[in-house]
Amino acid sequence: MKNFGGFVFLALLIYLLFSCKPLNGLPRIKVENSLDITRQFETVSLTKDFLKVDNLDNLGVRELNSQTILISQLVDSNSDGKVDQLLFQPLVAANSAKVFEIFKYDPEEKKTFEAFCYSRFVPERTDDYAWENNRVAFRTYGPTAQKMTEDGIAGGTLSSGIDAWLKKVEYPIINKWYKKELETEGTYHVDNGEGLDNFHVGVSRGVGGTAIKTDSTYHVSKNFANWKTIATGPIRTSFTLTYTDWNVDGKSIVEEKHISLDYGSNLSKFEVETKNIDTLSVGLTLHENDGMVISKVADGYISYWQPHKNSMLGTAIVTDGNTMIGYEKYITTKKDESNAYAHLKVKEGNVVYYAGFGWKESKQFKNQEEWEAYIASFAKKLRNPLKIQVLD
Image (cartoon, rainbow, N blue to C red):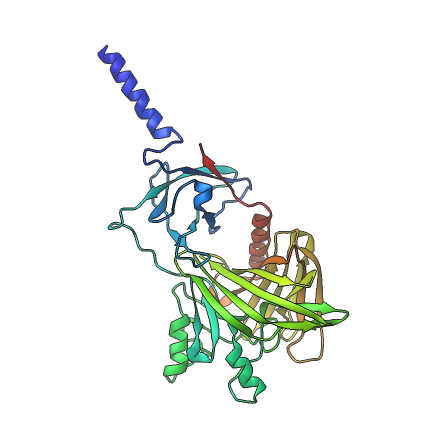
């Protein structure tokens, strides 16, 4: 009987260790990778409805086998005061799956993760909005900068293009660079080891600015009118930019951009809500038109590799493969208006795309081949997303 009792105890222990029902009553998550490449720096977003839990407060994620706690982030995406997303980034080998478990932190022992993904409104530099992660940084321009230009006041900027800040370091630089520019004798236009802002936008589309084409003309909005920061943290920063309605051939165009940037990615995600158009064009500035445009419409991306000052720079627009319906390398003698455009299909008033860059001096990409390989891989992953399953 003693041996039988020992057998029962061992069987029960094995069941508890490997059962899909954890002791804490919280679910386990299976993440499956169907591609023949390792997946990392891809964000999994879990909601309380998906997890079948009452709330996400103080929840975290750890690997089942190793019990390693993963970096995670809780997000209130609709700003109602309640957490509605639990974010984490799994590392999953090629053609394999991995199981993670949700657990609840003791509030006194909860880990704090460094907020590499950061964004904010910058009133001290007119009214920029700037965002960054551990690899890249961006900014765009607000209504005060627009009005200054329209009133002939020096220092204004009239552009809905997206500026690229070429950083070399993983740590956040936005606040540091603005302080250097505005409060010291230094400037972010000079590289002192962290990178610099030497990317010219003007009225161009920069890296992922939008436009609407009618006949042979591209129409663009003015600066953003309103902003709202949603989240900053170790995995994602996100925010919303709203534009004043503008007119194209008698149609009133509504445009609101929900922008996010995740840890480890060179590309920001743009989720655009719009009305009265079927096609949205998204551009990459061609600058001096001395680079090489690669278009892969069937795979959902365009890329531009160009000489930039004393180095090289790659920019790209990527979609899921079902959104891009065409492409144009638009050349004109008008200053800053030459852009490579991806034409994207608007579905029920929405369009989603990714836009970003890679700078050779950052040591992230040695050459055009590495940049193109990164973009092709990024697009392939979008077409084949990780499969997320709650285990019963």
